[in-house]
Image (tube, rainbow over the protein chains, first blue to last red):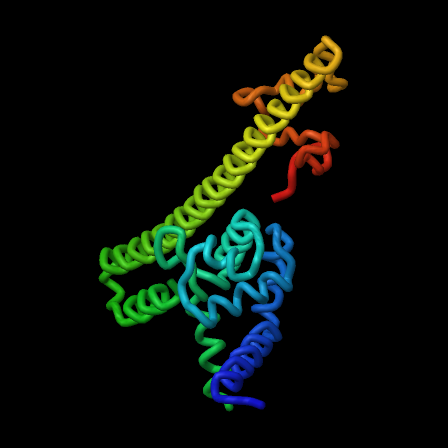
Amino acid sequence: VTDDSTLVVADEERELAELLEIPWVRDRVTRACEGSQCSVGAAREILAVFAEDGPLEAAPIAARVNRSTVAVQSLLSELRTDGILERTGERTYALSEDVRAELTHSSAGE
Amino acid sequence: MADALQNTDTVQSELPGSSDDLRRLHEEIAELETERDELREALDARDDRIEGLETELAAREDELSTLRTDNEQLREVVRDLEREGADGNGTAESGIDDESPILQAGGDDIEFGYTPVGTGAGFGRRAGRTRL
């Protein structure tokens, strides 16, 4: 049984999967994970939260993905250094303009 | 930044050869823009670092608070055992090593990363620094 909300979630998951298949995104996410305390799987969950909810601080993200704030903060820092995220304010991060453009491109290409 | 450089190049190519001062000004602007972008990046990196340290500090403070609570509970257990020993046979022998570093650590002088082992009072973690 599927309803509209199920379809939207499936659509977002597909877009995120496509995003992570883009070589420059995949390489930078992998590099960020290597420099942080999070796995690629955790990074994927965290990016999904950003794609769904927009700008967020480390603590609420950590609660969403059930990992320590310290670990999540370390990943956010690395992802920002690698241009996957950008700072939008004190303690707040969001998907970078380049990543948002890729997501938009992915949606528009359907 | 790339746009800025491109604009500078475009403007420069339109300048007459005698406008050296103007050309230099555009070059200077491009350099300043580069420097500004580098400073912004450095600032962001520092903010990341500060927030990372603050987050880690908060986690360590939580850990320390938990250790203090555990330690106090353990002291209470020891006091109870000593009272029972005194009531039962007239001695204060509790069977617990009073020289234990856990008991000696007290509430205020626990070092970060100190992890008591095997006391059976909520301490089940491995020795060494606790993973966060």
